[in-house]
Figure 1 (cartoon, rainbow, N blue to C red):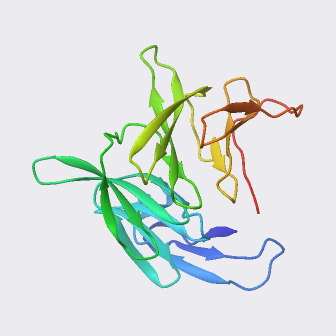
Figure 2: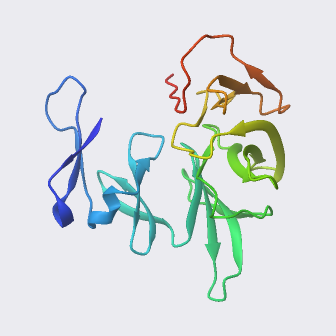
Length: 208
């Protein structure tokens, strides 16, 4: 687990085993506000929003992802919204292994909660607002550049973990407004409610 050590401009994130022991890795956070907009990069390291854009933070240092908006991320792919000097914006898919970037011809907005990219990098779970103001799920094909709306209302208070992918990218799991766990088949968009009795929930986690 990553834990904070130090305060303000000298804050350092330390990776430690849950049962204690020595520090396994460290990341220096150069700005105090970086502690407020910090999230997992899906591979064990961190994503930070700092002055100048979004950065990928590892034990070897910081690397700029985009000067625009980070729309979704996963173990294989970043999805960003990049704009030029006159605010012509485009959705960009970045392969994390090679750094290759390509434009995705789907209009996306930075006003929505951040989405989640499947581990295989082929699909992204995004959020859309219907005309009635309800928040719903959308599946974005990052290869074909197509989008499918999923008929599953989501809590307006979306947090990290409201939707999560199975490790094999076969299923997207979501916490619906009814507090139940729903499984979405990304190939068909079909939604199945898991027959498990649980208290109302809003956050999920999946481990291999």
